[in-house]
Length: 122
Ligand code: FES
Image (cartoon, rainbow, N blue to C red; front, side, top):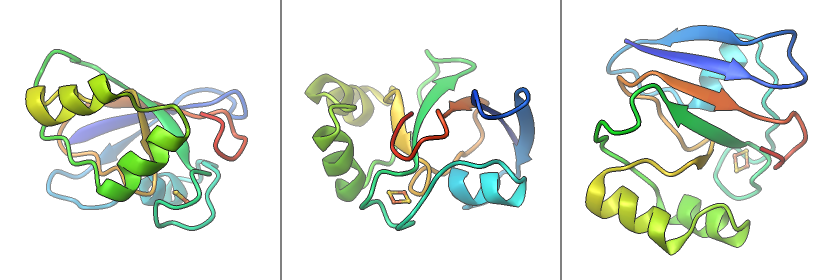
């Protein structure tokens, strides 16, 4: 089971929720189910409204990183994903700092998700 802690200046304080192991809900769906107001629009990796910053409880532990081509392209456009980030994710299984909440599925790692509350403004 993963603990996902959401934090934002528009929230009264951090809120931790549990993602069931094996679940395939995105962070955006998990946020909605728990009344956490991450901005969104397309739900499909196109608009970047749901940009989030992700920090890992154990950053040195290797993860199976799945970045879709669509997510990579959008994050690169925004200047939130470097060539080094992509290499780290695909070659070394080290997670990038920014993700799209509608594309990111928390597996069994504990993460903190930060967002500003403004669309695309992680
Ligand atoms: Fe549009 Fe996530 S809601 S990219």
